Image 1 (cartoon, protein in one colour):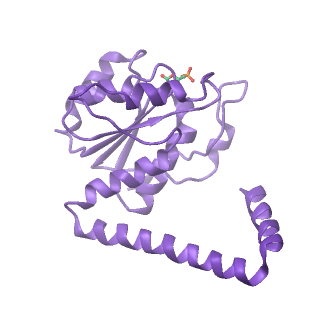
Image 2: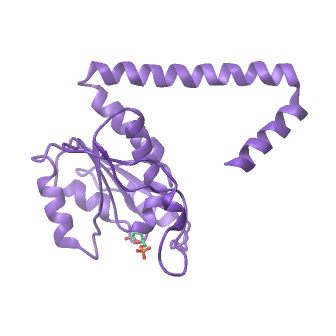
Length: 210
Ligand code: RP5
């Protein structure tokens, strides 16, 4: 695996670039990806990178592509129809405006598709339209839809699906959940120790650093 695009949460500047995307997220490019992360526009990347982060953490190989249902429909068809034969086992698809990408992709492949409704600065309806569009698939073509901007959960769900057939991933999933439990225990201990006011101050400080 080699390092490729380095991206971070941001919106485009006047010249159309994403300056903050240079901050290392360490997206890794895989030779044989088993998860496809796709989205309708590069403006979705600042959100969708969270799915890639999770896959990095779980050491799962993936590819990232911009495939638009309305701007590049032919490429979308080709992507969907070849994904399975190329070894892709789960597709995570983000979409904002006119969010038909996940459903269209799901109609052309039998591998699971996880949809991420996107709310970014280009979506005047705050992603509600995308959520409804992605989640309300008619019977027969399911798209496993996560929360608006829920790319992290999409990544975790992809790991969970893959873990069914991979004991190594099952162990990692269990460790991941254990760690969440431990983190919460530590937070409770700290809350008890320092009291509500001091805890809140620390929390605000930590949030302002993010
Ligand atoms: C959708 O349209 C994309 O998923 C994106 O969220 C939205 C806007 O795209 P841009 O105009 O920012 O390229 O296809």
